[in-house]
Image (cartoon, rainbow, N blue to C red; front, top):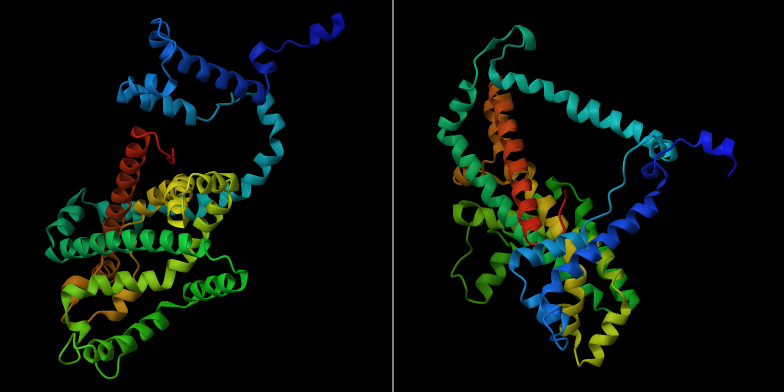
Length: 378
């Protein structure tokens, strides 16, 4: 480099470093920190101790810190040089950022209705401000508290059942070695996802019908019931009917991402397990499940945030006067009280409540994953 070039190159040493160099430095620093953690034991004059024995003597907080450092992604310094190098990627993201702002963030201005005695003729700026009176009203309504209980209960049931069945189906499908039967099972399991809820509800009603419904026929034929039962008059069964309807509709579709994660597992892991004497169940338990654990944690945290979004159609279509107390969700309550009666302030307040609860659940789940050193969202 000539003297003239040196005069032009006024960048600081940090700006001259590339993202790859920064990543290498971060990894080296992480290794040095782990080595220092073991230095107190390794310098005690007993070199026969293995790393596992030394790690066992670390406290729980130290182990958690070391694991977090190992999983931490290298941070790239944001400067003009980095922005110039990635300008094409930034330009590509502009339409998506605008879309998200217009359709997701701009409508949040309507939340002001929850703090007003909103009247359409007065508009957002002309309606009377009432503070938290609308929230006090909905929390004082017994029907809203029942709706929240039903929504939370059905959300938890759907979350547990969908995870258990989707993971189990993916594990079993992965063990099918014949390509033809495997593709057939995948295709058949995906089809219910593309059916509308009105069709699914019709199928559920036919299956549980008292008049020649297959479920009642089987229960009576095997002497489990003396006579056909009206499933839609039993409040204690409604949540489980909704839960298993969701399982039938979405299990195949939800298993796709787990099957994709399974394909990323190194085949040598299965060969090593086979040499150790592991059978098919042993390989699933000790190789497949640990291999897809990060995917399971990420999807679990995402779905925990959606635990109150249990849907609207199936509850609305299956409900009747006998089970209304356990079938009404927050969305149905908003339909009756917010839209049906024209009280938009009440509907907006209920929607804000759902959003706040979802944010709190995601934050708690992410904090728990961070505390245990598992995969997390942020």
